[in-house]
Image (cartoon, rainbow, N blue to C red):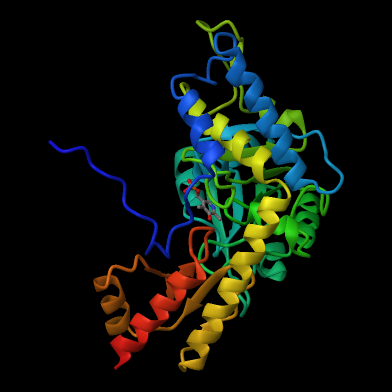
Length: 355
Ligand SMILES: *Cc1c(COP(=O)(O)O)cnc(C)c1O
């Protein structure tokens, strides 16, 4: 059989992944067979992972870096599952629950099911942000964790993280921020979202999304080493005594690729990507609004607009990889590979479809 060729990113408008930085590609290839899950054997990649955590900590506590702990996960899903697991293990109650805004990623449903934790989903406001009054009403003594989203998957919205953190801590719960997608954009905006903006306990940030690292490279960070200790299990046949990760053998490629991308791009490369993406999102939002579509004003570079089903289907037919929000709006994620030229072509195709 002929070797399969990866698809081009040319018409991919719906993905939160993107083309990796060239340096990250090379680094990933060199470490394909290294296993950071066995750090006593694979010492080089283990040291590289410490560097990854240091770099991620710098992004999430900027300009004053904190000494965060954590590791490179298989993605945002694993990081979110582990954050729930850590909070559950540290919470002294039998019937534990987690409070998540309805804009929260579906990985929290997986976490709740796997960990046998109650999921309390709370409504968002008219602009798709967590309602603090609803969160306040939902927390109780059994709440182990409150989740805030910093860059929601559907609309790119940022929840009021400092207020949610206060509510969580007042209730005796811990605070988790899911910045899986937004984490590499938010250092260049005015949002309060991370460790130096609030007493956030744990945080998800994925190098394999806006970090321009190869898949798989997610990130879980914790302010306090105790959050990671709560995840550790004994490892009888390894030289290291315990392991806090969810997976055993892990991708050295993900770790090395993440470090190479961050070394190459933080901060100026990421700032440039973030600014270009913001300009592209604003341009697309205007172009769609000019044509009479109802557009959800972009906050981070993610545009949602009410496009009729027939037109949506015709765009897919023309090869555009677009997706829909839960409410059925067209959703375009302006990742680094999405150029202005591609968006012009996209809008031209839309005009042709509209006739
Ligand atoms: C993408 C995303 C996730 C899931 O991350 P994976 O890497 O796909 O597992 C979680 N939360 C948010 C906000 C995301 O955008």
